[in-house]
Length: 528
Image (tube, rainbow, N blue to C red; front, side):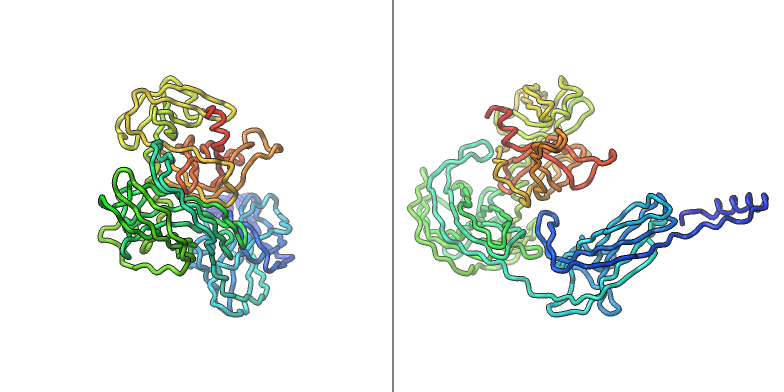
């Protein structure tokens, strides 16, 4: 409890000796004065629009000054609490719960129009109509416990409808043969695929365009890990998040390098299998398929005749179990997007140290050019060193080539760099949008080469913001000390931002409120 027995006995003894009697301290109490519900409203949660119920509550808390209180919403059906299907909306018994914590500033604290958004999708009820009670509680914090001060219920009719199935239609696919693209700083020859497609009922859902190759009904393998799924089949992936109920994608591109295709020298009749997939719980399922016959001649040079017309139809693929010793289990032919991004570029991310400061950097040219934050190196610019993931025990001295205090950027040059550096490509930050999936790699709290993920929360070019928060990408991806200067990556593994700061409130860094300098501003500063 808030007051310990020993303190009570000392205080009571003192007061009794003075003839004043024992103190009487009122226990915290609360009263809910208004409760209203808005049904079938939409709010953006974690970058995605969700339907739900908005609870409005007015209440007063007494005798709880300088302590925390909370408004809590449960759902009950009969005498039982309704469960939740998502961990974010579960208590320790997996009951559906939404809560909001507040602080009582006065002996009698009034709280007006406190709102709690309760999304429908995580409510664990079957299809049909259900008589449910929305149970609102006001609680206070007491020595790590949260006792209930008061409750109020409102009956609602909850209708669980079957969610509309996500559908896709591939309208057009074209190929550019024998083209060159920069991959990890090296010019690579391959095939570039262009797809025009439509996705319906997929707003806010993680979707992907995935290419496989088959020969005689069997999937062709890949010799390079970053072009493999968990079964080591050749796979190229492009992710997207539809932002409308009906989203049109006019020119999604996939670059498919020839070299990783595991085929012997000779002529091969192949089938390209292009899938549109949508995430359903923990796996991505095919919702549309395009197949095209193609002939590949493995030799020097590689030649590819024009592909045949598309044949769009349902995907029929073998479903073998994971190979023995497989490290990940994403399901048969299930692409692991985060894994692919990590494997593709992790060796381009370096550990940066300057005196006692530690941070992250990215190799952006094969000559050893490294991009990081200025605040990482400013305390000891003559003592900057980097460590490579491939040679973690070795430190390389660096020259500081260029800095900007306003942009919090620094360009370093590794002295005598190895000849086999992995290079991280700068993406186009003008092509990202709120809700896009992003990945971050860095060294938070010294935990080297850590991968985290999130979404773009906002594009901050607001002139009314303080200068340090202008022209920044806001993300909910985890950024901690040690991540500074690391890359913000799109699903292609391109750097679309440089992680630079975390917003602090009252001196306390806030979780899920981080910022990155857009890559196009970086490119302009570099003069590229």
